[in-house]
Length: 107
Length: 242
Image (cartoon, rainbow over all chains, first blue to last red; front, side):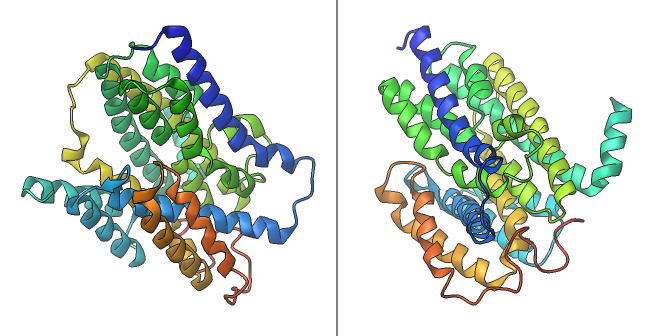
């Protein structure tokens, strides 16, 4: 399907690009002074991205719906987290809810 | 080894170390399915681990494999993976101070779960310890998982049966929830998530979350809390000792 050198080359390219995204902030940080307001926007961006990542991953598989079982499990996690449940409980009950619903035949 | 673990446990708190181990374990199992799927799709046995070492980003690796396996061009696979990982740019800026002493290793380990774990800590020293503990742990588990999955093939053919696909969003939710107790952060994040959900069916995989950043325009409109969300967790509870 794909030759080994092309596969290695593509992996390295993706790895380098990914590293560049991740390292831009830390490497620039040492050189330029980032104002507190920019820093605050960046912190907010990180939180916004993580929430968007969680919510889209709860509802979609790629660009098609992932089904009710997964969404329900994540909904349980949201409620538990809001009520300050312990981390382990949140994660295990979310996975457990989804697994149970699938066992019962919910998509 | 045991002494080191005990030392870590003392410095992080047993609760935090346990939480990190749980996430590591979950990521390890997803790694097994990643290795199995990649090798099952016809890629060589070394491919999953090569990707896990040089890229270290689950979503982009799954997508890369999927495109190559479907006969797509390597160029398309690389570009799609890069789009998915573009969100790490703001992560790097948000965590620049956290990884200041080891910027290269810190950047390399900047995985979603690690970012969420680190941002859930307010104190800089704790944040650093949590970042590197979780990051190195995830590196080990993700790579071991990828290797094991490649070797085992389809022994665990469907991790969805265990609800593991719900565990990843649940981990992120649990970790960002303290930050969301701040009303302004909550409003911006929820609006952003709605935008992302709305555009998901229409844009390439992984790009939708970037649209969530449009909600940042609400920041000046909303009354901020007294302190900027430097460490998301302006409120009490939740953060350190879960």
